[in-house]
Length: 235
Ligand SMILES: Nc1ncnc2c1ncn2[C@@H]1O[C@H](COP(=O)(O)OP(=O)(O)OP(=O)(O)O)[C@@H](O)[C@H]1O
Ligand SMILES: [Mg+2]
Image (cartoon, rainbow, N blue to C red):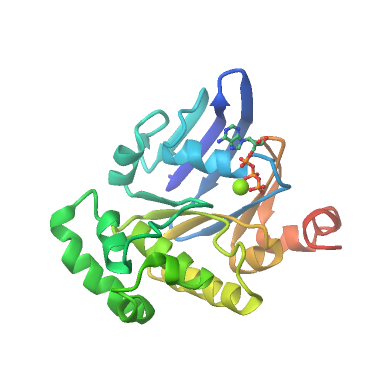
């Protein structure tokens, strides 16, 4: 049984305009899986449909053995899925610590213990605990956004363009952090613009084009594929 199985998923922002048009993908326990594709293909929309921020108009989303399509985001969060959106993923006017407290919305009583564990894991966040999130660098902000998502101890983390806007060095550090989290047992489904870097740390990948999965396979095979290289990897 897959950790996450998405089958024939459909949906968008308004009923008349379907953005995700029957997409199927899966994430197995312990995997890092990438979702790549052109701008506007529906990658962010697909993640929002899976995480319960948008309501699917069709298809199935199964997390472990539960059908979660149509459940509210908080219920999906309780079942072990956490989502880091592409934009506005931290509260800029709040401190680092307050942001982490917001991440504990499912189990406020566990907040202190979880925050201490995350400070031990990400010493930069401990050093900056009283700093306002808006004063963090882009890379630090992405770490904070991920740490907020980790406050609920998820089994599966959905990441939407974690390296967007980062310098090559900061992006490299962020990818290393993602690999380390995965080694600790968190499965990852990641949308990335930096397709080459994403494929390098992924076991498998999917290419989404106009709301449908156009290609899928082992990340290494997709990286070696000339048509994928032409489209996403600069030839
Ligand atoms: N909040 C919204 N309301 C209405 N339509 C939206 C909204 N967000 C995105 N769309 C539309 O949905 C389509 C797919 O957008 P989406 O953000 O899912 O693409 P994407 O693959 O994530 O692209 P990118 O690589 O640029 O992030 C686009 O046509 C976009 O205009
Ligand atoms: Mg997007």
